[in-house]
Image (tube, rainbow, N blue to C red):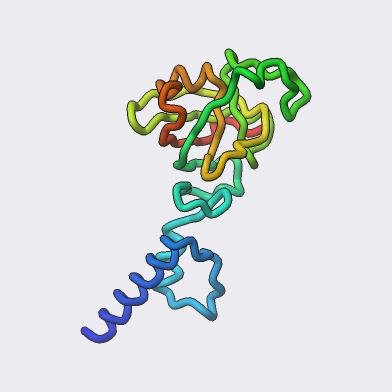
Length: 162
């Protein structure tokens, strides 16, 4: 019994280390023990398997999108440029850029450091900076209280998907 528990604990530790190093969570049933499968399913990977981005639900379903990661903001020189929808970007509007969520989706973004939250509409594609989950307009970043810092740890979850 002790040897079996030790083997299970060892398999779980190997799995957690592999997941922490960015290993794929899509092992086939034939190649993974039940312990490994459970551990891998409990740490779902999203976006581009960034180590700093963690999902608590299935990111492929926009209505269930609930992801933790790093937000940045953009504005200034982008004001007036066309966004992915073909409309003019306004840094004073409550909007955001996201790589995969459908355009015109509404998401709730919560700053994990101060608890502030906003609702923004996905109007553009991005962010293009490494390991960023979402780019918010300056107005949204200001409402969340991180304009001066440039980035913040956030939770992003869908409110409505278009």
